[in-house]
Length: 225
Image 1 (cartoon, helix red, strand yellow):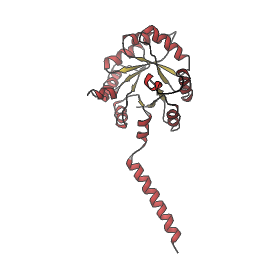
Image 2 (cartoon, helix red, strand yellow):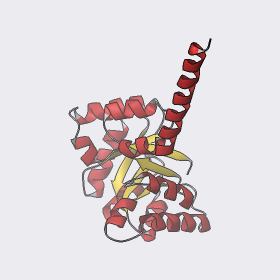
Image 3 (tube, one colour):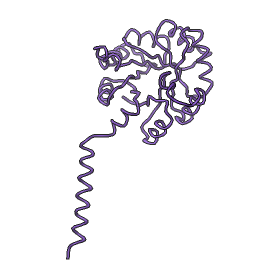
Image 4 (cartoon, helix red, strand yellow):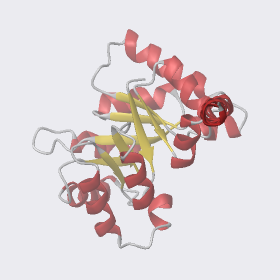
């Protein structure tokens, strides 16, 4: 896995995570956007500004191709690093195909992908990214990481190189480890999981031990005759 994206629309989380120097992009969705107090377009522009040249996925709300295309044009005009998130389906494929035309060339991230066939269709329609939702598959007793591995293998065999695989619906640090091993190009990670990735009980114990030993050594130096 070559890149880590943050899955968030919260400005405080974004600013904090950017300070770590590990992010290569960001994804949002209507649920995340709805939790924030800022007006939608202000939030889109602010997030895109914070992310610099890194891609920011923003999702359309229309369910018909024509409406998706119009929304996409409007969103793409807000900032040069906007990527349009399009839900998988026939209407979504129509929209992606139109947005991929030479006169448009608006990058799309096809979301809510749950099968290899859906990923293949999205790639052939011209998607810049496909987002398999591994956590939601796990919720219904399927293996989300296995799907990512299958998509990676099929894309490799079919020489599909223009469409990147974003492992989404990440629930815990183990998911990140597993999709990286499976060959996903990107994992988009909630801030809570990103923080968990940085920590480990043995790291905390080791640091505490180092500081304790150092403090004890300095104290002994101070009481030596």
